[in-house]
Length: 501
Image (cartoon, rainbow, N blue to C red; front, side, top):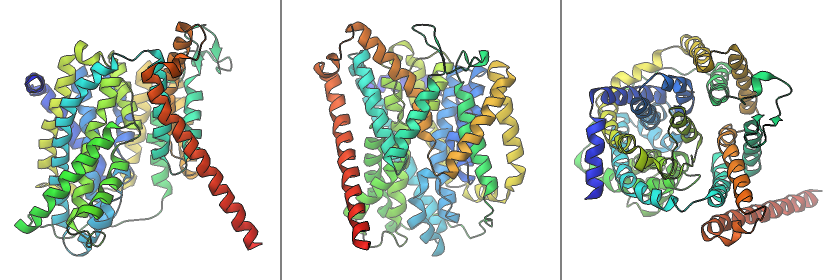
């Protein structure tokens, strides 16, 4: 009953006219961004992050959250109709595009929309029930436990964000080093500033995010000479009853998988879609059809994608740990508005927490309407030339980064990180771990140094305190497993070269 009372309290805040408008705006922008090739919630939230300075706190966070989970809906449309995937809709290209080739585009889009609604609803129930429990557990965390948790998050996120663990850890390290630029809060020492006064306060989060994600993505898209024609196929939405009955079991399985992986450090929509697809290939009655245009191949991944997007807010709001780059930007939005996500957030800002949770279900209803009956209209987005879009995006990038401190230097820094971001993309290095390292690095350093101060320089509390030891144990196992995997792969490579010689 307590959860129901809290949700009722949240709906009383989320159903105000202003918050409804912000929620609808976030869902519309998110869906549109999901439809556009080359863009995504990461770049969009980074572009709109400066707006949180001038908007009401609750409305700004509701809008940014709507952009994130709204983009998961829109991603499926471009993947199914044109086989243009985003990171969170790669699996949708498999069976979804096969359904399009068979003339079942409408059925595939209906399946994705309804399954996403089911996944989002299940995830919201999990979020409302589990987040307060985790926040009470998080009160047991001190500097030692937080340090161990951040370290575990580093390893987990790097593993799933990029195909190479070494590349992921390397990018995390680059982000950590960038986060050290500025003035040391404990000693006042200038670090890595090269004598430049403009770097005494460090590098701004907005400049890094706009450069590495916004400008880098635009440059990459302009560098791609491949042209795709707009989708002009027929759209017939409504399925038959036997087809509808195939959607529900797969969507429920995907919802469970996505909810679990969304909570775990390093989880999220990208890994959840593959896991749900694998579960369907094992458990579905129609598993032999999956991969050839089966409804289950669309339903399971869409539900998992949306569920993971919602439950990824649990580690952020209950423990103050962002599990992916988008959540790192959401954390920045919280901090910009003077709110520290963590175990005390529910007690200190109950209206904001429960209002945000309630707005997610309201946004779910908005998105169901936007992505099922209005699919025909959304597909007209593909007719907009990209050449007409990127000048405006670059303009808002410059305005956004300048508006933070009214400093032209920030625009130059953004341009530098745009070049770096594009370089990383050309080298096929994922920039998301860099962002996470930039956010989590200072947190790791601060809690590590604080823990050592409390223990008077002793490392013993990291392994003697139960919670810290429980968090470090899987981290140690992960490192050992990666080390042995690296050694084994190296030995195989050496043996293959000898045999070839």
